[in-house]
Amino acid sequence: MRRVFLSIILFTVIAFAATAQSALKLPSLSPNAKVTQDFSLSSIEISYSRPSMRGRKIMGDIIPYGHVWRTGANAATKLKIGEELEIAGRKVKAGEYALYTIPGRDNWEVVISSATGNWSAEGFPKEFDIARFKVKPMTMNDAVQTFTIAINDITFTTCKIELMWEHTKISIPVVARNTTTVDDNIDKAINNPPAVPYFQAASYYFETNQKIDIASRYVDKALEANPKAFYMWYLKARIEKKLGHVEEALAAARKSIELAQGTPNELEYKRNNDKLITELNKMKRYNQPQD
Image 1 (cartoon, rainbow, N blue to C red):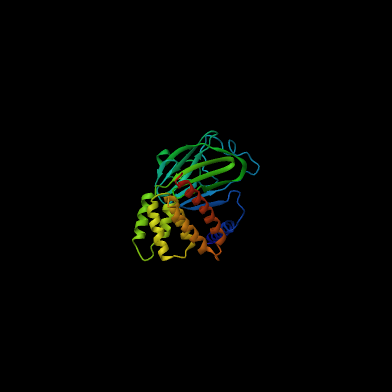
Image 2 (image 1 turned 90 degrees about the vertical axis):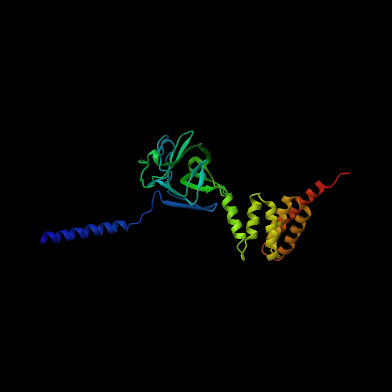
C-alpha cells in the first residue's frame, strides 16, 4: 500500500513538472512564420521557421553546399497550394507538400515532396518527389539577417516564390493556367442576374489584354446601371483607346473628370484622365490625313 502511495506521489510530481515545463514560454531563435497569399483563383500558403544570421556566416557554412536543407529551421517547410500550378515548369496539383532545397554555389536544387511528416532533412526518398528542379541563386547587395520566404511579382497568372538569406536569393517562377476557368466563371456570372458583374469582367479582360471588344460591351452595360460612376468612365476611356476609338475615349475621359468632381478621388482621376487625354490627342494628330 505504501509503495502504491509513493507511486501516486511520484506520478503527480512528474505530471506537475511536465505541465510547468509546457507552460514556459520563451523567445525563439527561429520563430515560426506563415505566408498566405491570394493567387489566381485560390491561395498559396507557406509555413516555415526563420533562423537569423546572429553574426554567423550562412551559405557554405551554417548551410553547407551540396547538402539537403529543410529550407528553414526545425520542421521541414510546408507549401500548400489551392489549385494546380506550374512551379518552375512542373505541374503540381492542389495539396500540401514539403519544400526542401539543396543549396549550391552556382545552382540550388529545389525539391517539392509529398513526404510532409519529416522533422529533419532526412527520410524523403525520390519516389515522394512531386517536382525537382534547379534554380540559379542571385547575389543581393544588402544582407537579409533573418531567413525570409516571400511571394512577389504577382499578376493574374504568375508570381514568384522567393527565398532570401544573407546575400543570397533564389526566385521560383509560378504560373496558373487559369484562363479557361476564369472565362467559364465570367460566363456563368454574366448569365446569372440580377447582380451581373459587368464592371469586374470588363476590368479583367482589359488588364489581361484579351477580348477587348467584349470588355467594351461589358463596361457599357455596367454604365447603364451606374451612369455616374466616374471610375467606370475611366475604364471605358482606356478600353476605347485600346480599340483605337479616339473620340469615344476622349468623351469618356472628360465624363470621368466631370463626375469625379467633389469626390475624395477628384485629384487622382483628374490627373489620370488628363494624362490619358494628352495621349489620345497625340493619337488623333498622328491619325489625321497629311496634306
